[in-house]
Image (cartoon, rainbow, N blue to C red):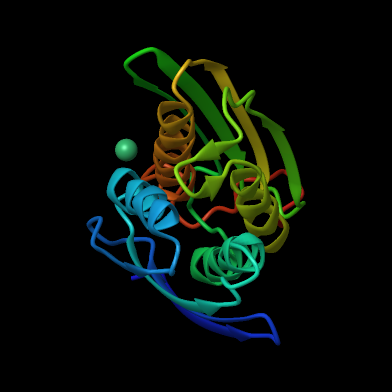
Length: 195
Ligand SMILES: [Mn+2]
């Protein structure tokens, strides 16, 4: 089992993440931000990873530090869980629709952090959730997982749908990229021999 447990504590947040890449989609989520819990549930379910997130953040200010730091901590856990990347597919992609909304996510366990985030949200808020935080979450995750991540919402009217398709597609793409490729055996999927 490719597993990691990370505790991260700053003056702004206290976060604990447990992640099993070879899980079955079991999520235990208590981030303090209900909409984020709903989105993290999508990553776990559609990524078939087991994910536990417990966070105590400075929500009296707003959700910014908490959501960003959860992205960072999940990124660190992914980096640790995927290990030396022997035998993984490395690249993953997915298109996910939800009614009128359609998003595409492409991921590369490149070892180089990078995010292209192109999501023209139709609203500034989804309930109490500031849509800017979706970008912050994936920036923190990409930086600390050291992955290249291209996220595009191709169309959508309903901002909840736009956001949900992004998180579902991320889960699916992550699953594909992190999956062991039976034909690759113990190879590191790079001609450089390192990722
Ligand atoms: Mn929903």
